[in-house]
Length: 213
Image (tube, rainbow, N blue to C red; front, side, top):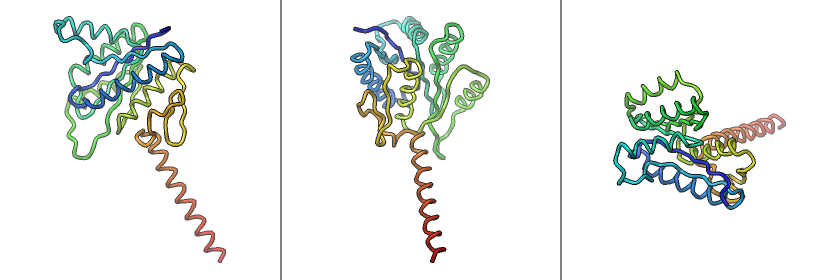
């Protein structure tokens, strides 16, 4: 029995993030099965690919925008550019949040490499963000970082209804392994710091040993 339906909107360039969009949608659906079985809470991914192409374009976009307004969480990811439709969807989400306190808005930027060329649209969008509030933002290298932050957003929204544990380098959801921490930025950095700390401690031991001699 479904007691609650949490809708998660995902906005991005379909071209730039085709594989990532598929991966995130499948991830949400897998977690939904676990959540439904335990708490009767369904997680519904809202992606434009899921809308019927037979619907007239204007009507389809209106319906899609309403689905966005009705969502509980909205995630937007960008890489080298900020596409027109994704920016418009972000603005709709922000307007809806100011009016009804939903959906919560999360914005993430994929980390750039030295050879990546930044489009002016991304520069302009970041300037607009600097003048906006009531949203969360961050960066990511691997899409698993965004998946993990979706989990954290769900945890904040549903409290104890989402069971997340970190164990042996993995993220466990309801006791099942679903993410490796090796792809998640926060934990990758922590592992690097731990490695540096271990190496430093070993150096100190060697220095102390040589001094005793």
